[in-house]
Length: 437
Image (cartoon, rainbow, N blue to C red):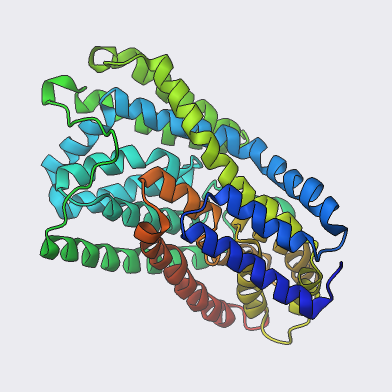
């Protein structure tokens, strides 16, 4: 049965609600995606069989190709940091040198470096965050707030090598530096809000006596003599961040190639220089890390599969022409239109790809400033992708060891509310900067 526009909207809302509620109640995101997609497929053009057995798995397969390499290598890098004692050293030394308050900012700064250079910060940062939070005697969720909030701040900056910044440049014919002023403004607003929020969270933890909450089977803190010196431990971070940027900017490599090469070099370095402090079989560690990350990858990609079915619904087919018909300033079309599309997809990459290839191109052809289109679309795609069933949420919850009931409220603030605020502010700023679009 193919639903009309009105019924299609109702069914889409029901499907998203099923996805969100099941995931929030602890159901596997993969199972939640299957059930929500099955409901949606019953009322979507092409029929149930076409959407559920072809479109849905096709969307998953399309995204797994890129995510498999990025997340697998990122997860293995993090695991090697942990078993070689590198993460412990960084955490203990930074805390000893800088103290509790400054360490939070250092964690945010390192996260921003990773995020800007391309590697997935949610895959690479947890070991460092755990070590720092353990040293500061703060719960892991404080690290989650710092990493999630700072990661978003970095991704809206001009020059960032994330897919959400590179992809619109390829589609719109812009560069990753276009619309720089808007990106800087968004970054500053995000950082201010995150710093205020993370300090409030820390203050509450101290008042309530909340301390570090170790993960299941978490290794004990190493003695100083049982971990590498800081001069050795900091090098893998420099290699991962620096080489990724060199490979992309200097050699023109694709972001995925650069990230895989940079993290591989970092892993080899740790394996060679930290053998003295490694008490496990590194090949077994890599095996365990690569196996643990696969369900996370599939869960994240399941959202993309759901989004491809959403794209076949009658309501989605009407949304883009409807947005293009709004008689408002182009900045309003870009920000609110992008948010609407991302809310339907729950995926920033699918959302910005759909927006850029349709509405974005059309606006530029009409004479709207291309830099404004690029930057506003990129910074506003990091809003409603942070629904409970969103891929970034699934990744963050799994990596930091929380379920949605315990951890989502923090991501909701730093990855949805705060980006919504900076997106709306930047929309009005753009209206002043480009009064005619």
